[in-house]
Length: 73
Length: 252
Image 1 (cartoon, chains in turn orange, red):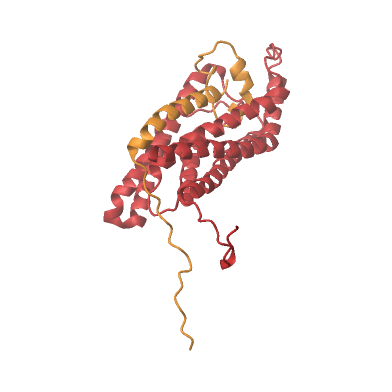
Image 2 (cartoon, rainbow over the protein chains, first blue to last red):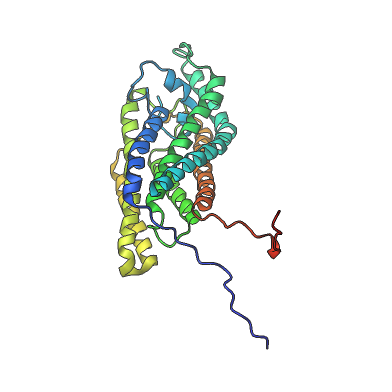
């Protein structure tokens, strides 16, 4: 019988190297806050709280706010 | 070097979020907008008294450019946040490749950021919701979202800690069970909100909520696949393929 040679059919996943927390922290703090501010304007501005007066922001993202699941009106 | 990796992943996360946002926008426009229009029709039929306020933004703008603004910013923002979470998760959550980690993270994010809060405080179409309770509803919704995300992070850490003692399988089951029990307690003890008008069509509410769920599934699913691909290519660049073993003559 022909000897079957065990072949590595699937390569084991290469576990990626971890990134040190020190390298992540400045990006996480700065961009994390920036992204949360953007989400606030899409999701909650001129609803329960207002930074900009009026209703324009609320009305502009009205449909997105309903469809993305944020409480509206 | 590592800082550059974080920056590159962040940029890719935001781009993947934008791409996923475009997909979600298509779903929102095709599946969601008809329900929004029907709900606004219901609202106008039932409250003709103050139905003629000054319209700041027209319906046709709200359902196109306005919707696009909201969904795309949502996609980019969550893409960026997810990419930063990915930097923490990479190589720390278990033996997963770069691509698998991305899909695992986006699946978990779909559950923790959206599905878990949605099951307690589901998305509501126009004309459902009392304007006087907007403050309470907003607080409770964001509280549920923050709680769910923090508990998901906590469960991940718990699972990591238990893994050496219980093995990966039982550690994962225990961590997920702990998450489910705590979320169950939150469901039980946080106040119920039901402001659906008695004569609001049940099928319309159901369709609206299903479309809201579909938007998020497409958004996070699309993000996981696109970002996973971009991250994999960035972290494990494939060596330039040698064309079928034939030696290429050096050009003179």
